[in-house]
Image (cartoon, rainbow over all chains, first blue to last red):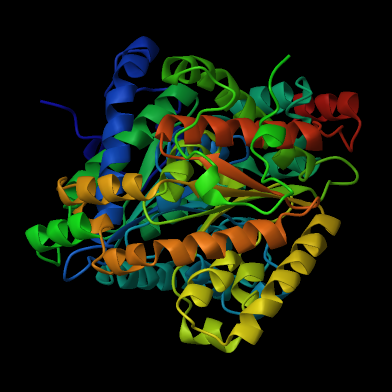
Length: 281
Length: 281
């Protein structure tokens, strides 16, 4: 019996202490070799399920409205971009919508914090990926005091309502916190500074953010405690090992899509009639 | 000396007669086996060049503005979606922006025909892909008489000006006409009707469009004759063989990106200082 990654990696119901959750574990798979051996099968399954999800929204007499939204959050170097490249990268890009959220523009700031998020939501049948998301509005915004406490405090509830609304309209939200150790971040930042093809990924602001590590971990704990719902649960992905991160998120997406169980839509026309029409044309 | 696909596949300067261009040829590669053997090398090169293009727009003291836009046009079943899946699919989806243009909405129709196109343009560093494009406004619109002739006739010039403007702002436009025979289309439509996983791709309107084949070929010839410019040339891709289509477009993109020659951006900070800061943090 295959292990359920959605069960295994789901954020606990009891108050989360991130320091108690190992970031270098690899639950559900024995070793890197084991993961690399199994990955192609699940990657193929993911690509197949994505195509079905897309198909059922684009055919039949009553196209389905379902879609999927993968939310990636984590500290700098935790592997959000790597997940887009290696996990989303196995799917058909025609059925993907990737959004990377940066510091909001002046126009975005003039609207409520969900305004830019709503504009980026995937259409029916699509797999959306948010590299950072509306959660930044209770993470950096909280840690850096960018809005008053009484404003960001309200946002946890607003986010839960928003995600419930998404679920009601057919969107399954899969939220992954890429959990790395402070030491892993140090190694990865130094690796960027040692590699001419990675210098552009380093930002001098990264060290200042890093110094706020404890405040960020606390802000992430609040996110996990306040916004992991039955409707849109958080998964805590041990992400010190890139191979495990990729494998685990692939497995999560496959399980989630299998639960959606998208079906090839039936013809909304008479097949034999159409064959004759094509043959005669 | 490797063959230049950009030279080989470029639409001829003399008036194009599509019936004279074989759709089942495979210039530049001996056989399917040969193409499949060589493809991984060029696919890897494409992914690498895409990452450099993205990097140079996101780092250094003066981020580059360059990007690339692949325009895919062709009759139904010519393989536009397959090209997105198999050619764009080897690149990092985080650096891709795919747009599939359908019949325009009421709002889009209320604006000039380039309005929705401009909104979909790739940002600096991105590879954009248009599955159908502004060319529909001189193809189906012309064949189906959707606007008066004096309006669509002006559009060839407007398109050339638009693409010149894109070039001036750093966008390299690669336009591929996926050239299939009428018989290949018939086979592919019948194959869709025979495969439960492809029924959703068939549309009862496809036969009506197919009956207008000669008018469409003529409209494509006008496109190739009037909008293949030094700035934004058209390539005619023999597309009866899917393996050739994928191989040829991969080679075209690699050559085009090699000409852009994107560079890993230098650090806009002092590397040794930053190493010390990270180590001390």
